[in-house]
Length: 274
Image 1 (cartoon, rainbow, N blue to C red):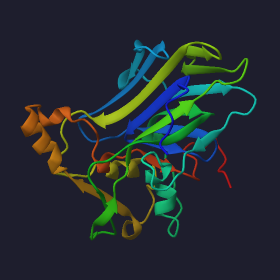
Image 2 (cartoon, rainbow, N blue to C red):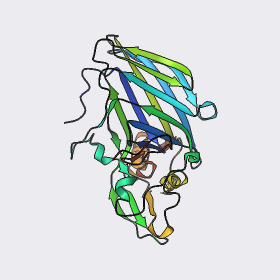
Image 3 (cartoon, rainbow, N blue to C red):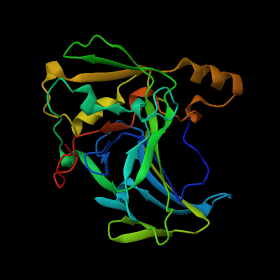
Image 4 (cartoon, rainbow, N blue to C red):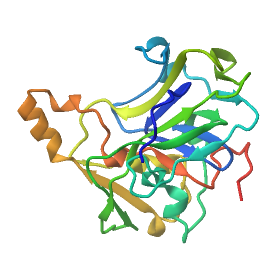
């Protein structure tokens, strides 16, 4: 069954675009420094009553982002947990996991300098919020023969519940606290982290190749897995039928997936989980 929307979470997170979520220990999000053109980095923070419309609190953009962000939940047993339910629209298994892709190949090396910022999270239920309309294609080596990989997660969501007396959550940007949520409040906070293309993708987009500027940098060329997807024609048909410009259909293509490392840490500050 899909992720339940009731009771309403105390904090709702969304991740979309070119970033890596590592689950080596809790969750650490690495936001890519180098991306194709037309990729805009924004972190939007909102707050609203649990049955009302959210209000805007803050926006952090690329030129002003600090190296470190942190969402720290204080309760008796904080836990990061992927939602796994094969066949479910919210199954975390729809994410592209580089550790899984290379499970029979070379280890995934990480270049800290390839990330503009890191975000630490110590609690939450993580799931596929939206899957691509088109198919991701993969191929290995210098002259890859691309084959369909399938539909993949282009948005990853997470829900955090402050369901114990005295439980709190603090979201910090650098040393500045953006908000502090507390158990029993009739409020839901939102954190939307986006590094997606704000214009239409080219016909033969290769956005995910930029992951190799931060992870898998040293993988030999003959073993490197490459990615592409072809523009989903329904975007054009829907746009033509509705009169809405096709760039308004902003869901990322499959090749602009948000990636995962299930075992490899993305910061040298952390030991790997075994």
